[in-house]
Image (cartoon, rainbow, N blue to C red; front, side, top):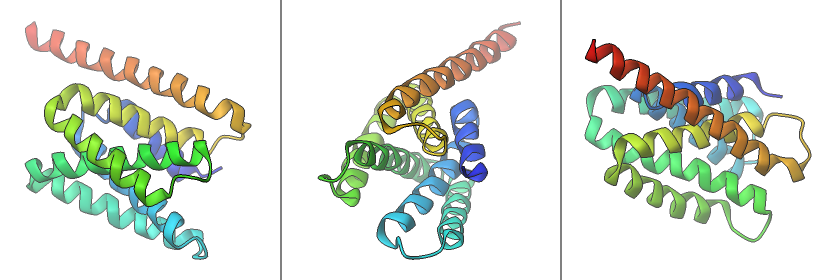
Length: 170
């Protein structure tokens, strides 16, 4: 069980929509980590964490200084993380890079079209995938767990959004 991935997943799951920089930084971390593991599996886990940290820092810098670019990059990376998760759940047959690019482009398009809702959905699903992949569950339950955890994240983020908008109205 990897606690760093679980903590990043929890951040994405609960704060990805409310704090854009958490979303882009978390997506950058997950993308760096998973891409390093997919393309350089013989490297030690510490190298994957360094790649994740570089991705996280790059994402936060983008989110803080170049938000329009960060929106596209965040959607692409978040979608790519989801694509890698799906490819790994399905098993061999879909190369990791194809799943990452195809679902990443789809994530980018969705974020551009419906930014707020897409941010909520993609951050919840990506966070759920980071958390579930680190739980000792049989493969047969992982998909169900991702759906349940993502749904919980959507509910948490939705309630935070409602609470935030009702406080602004007062």
